[in-house]
Image (cartoon, rainbow, N blue to C red; front, side, top):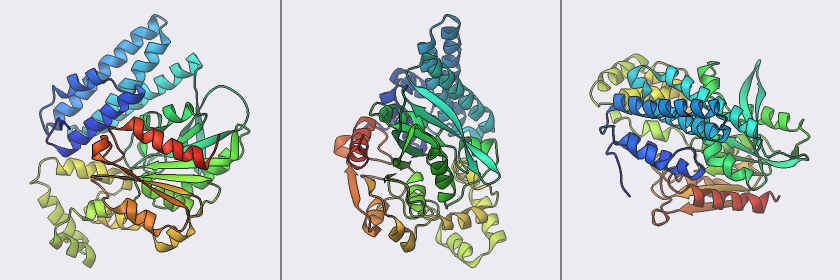
Length: 399
């Protein structure tokens, strides 16, 4: 396939954007015209041009609102939110991350409000109890009464809120599901507005969310499923090992050990310093090393933010807690679907490793390059991805 950029992070981001055209969260012409203005590896241009496209759509959305065209307004706010989210990917390099993220979230909120005004879909803002506060979330449903099966969507480490719509809700709603998502610790508003960092034990999020769903008359509590994407492919099996009120679970892809993504990039001498606990020297050598490769410091800042650490040593130490144990795997009771995309670039081989370690009923689902469905979370094959995942869920949690 056309790579568009030699820069790996740019290329993957464009693949995600193109995949989101399937549910109209982006538009192909807007994507192609935007990336045509971005030189390979130019992070400043990346932020500027995606923001410019989003600004234009936001302006057009305002015009549609002023003339009473709410359906066009909702569509434009959704695409604007998606393009601001793309700008966020590299906004650390320009020092504008929080500003751009706020614009992304504002556009999303406008999409929610305009969608609710149209009445085809109801998007309810919810608050999930968490420790001494609450976590913000959304519940998507079609109009009507009566308890329905409900699919919980668990985002990845850096997925935007529009991912819940483009990669889950839009398709699941058409099959009669109610869909629920929450900004968990380290994700989106929980991180940016509440300063709540990542945690590995996602049952601390899933259990209070399931508790909340059990209080709602519009949820069939015997038919609750959960789908985790990207790093959610770790959090979901970890959570359902401890929360057994889930009828079926999906990991897209399967992740057994999050830390391999980060630790695999360390040279041997730095790994030795980490293992020895030499924090000061590790940080000093990392800081010197990051002055050399362009873009690496920005990428690492993006990865470190949700862990709420500023020390490189603390970051690489923290990720060691994000591993599934044999005890975790043995405790999972519900049927599991584990996707296994060819050319998985972040956690290669771990889908099969997860499936092999499970004693519950498990399906390992391959996606291939020949289908145009390879790569992390199958970004360019959203139709095929959702058909296979939702068919499996239909079989295990019938309508």
